[in-house]
Length: 115
Image (tube, rainbow, N blue to C red; front, side, top):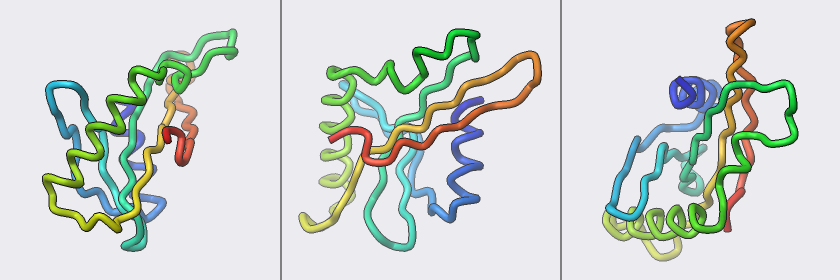
């Protein structure tokens, strides 16, 4: 559900979706996109049910180990798809919190979240 919400958001924001669920044995990239033919954006989508104590958001689950796997997977993607070494890229996180009572979602787009 969270990935669908993220995709709808990205399309509204004029991102071109290049790939989804790109997998390697050590990691996965949920969405690969591009905006205005600029840099490649690798997007990790984290979805959680909304809780009363909002001190920990879905984005907080992207720890150091996950960040390293995302970077490695993004680098392999660029190599496999034969992008130039000069291609700029970044890794974003989209955090989606689902409120089951109101049946609504809150979305937070954290750009360049992993580096």
